[in-house]
Image 1: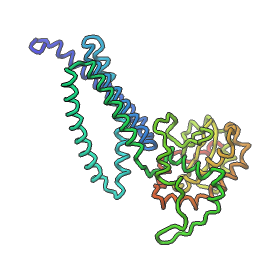
Image 2 (image 1 turned 90 degrees about the horizontal axis):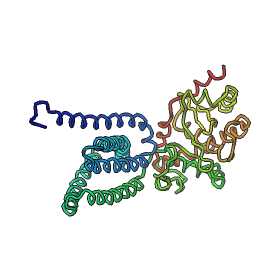
Image 3 (image 1 turned 180 degrees about the horizontal axis):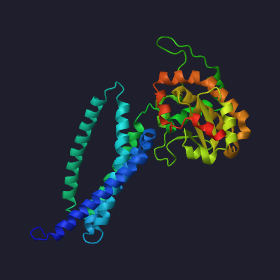
Image 4 (image 1 turned 45 degrees about the vertical axis):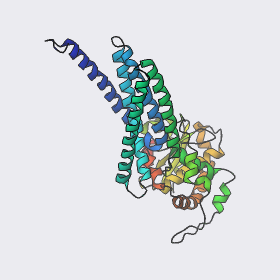
Length: 365
């Protein structure tokens, strides 16, 4: 084929390879667009998910040579598609972890050390791979079985490593864990009566262990298939910061908007529950503390309304007022505790979808 004038086989092989890479790169671009905000909310889950998908892609590539003339292009393309798609998940998640390690704003130092560890690991893996290939006597079946065993070990190690990471951002399952502890009936009175007097260096009250970084991170389920957002533990209702215009048009009637704007007239946020979801709409001048108050109000409302009909929230205006007042009383006590523990309270507002509630006045006209 290489010495022929037409070079048909070479050209065909080239086009097959280009097509394989094209499919993978298009998949990576498509997945990256949808993963942009999800990875920040739940990097542990997406790091593990990325490794699993990478394993599947490599499996397709190993199997592809067994079908040189029939399904080679199909398996090779699927392998590249899965591997490129996995890059969009575990690559950004890995960088989130590096950023969490840079507690002294030394991201360059942390990145350099992490890359050194990656290179060292690849060299060790290369040596082990050569040894296994030699022992398997180039048998594809034996090599594939050895790969599956090593891939399972790799995924297990990834699970253990991501479980050990202590993230300081208040997002997703970590924030839900803290909200659940605060709004629990046994703890509400404790937080309402808690007196925190700040001094130059310390707080008079210590942060409960349940609100600690270690406890909240330990509560995360990296195998969960639930949306990457705050989930109310007992009802399973997702709590979302912000919403798009389509949600407002489809799930909220003008009279409901008017009711809720009245309840939260003095707040820089508005909370609502409709369409099987709860939302916190932030004003343009809202702060992270306002976002925390809104999340507390919604969680408290759902805690007292287990089994509540989210399609008829207008009848629960009194309950919303009670939840609003509870959140306003508790937040000034909770926020200093979270900051003293080392939580990045500013990260709460980063999850907002950006639809501020000033836009809702159009629904009332």
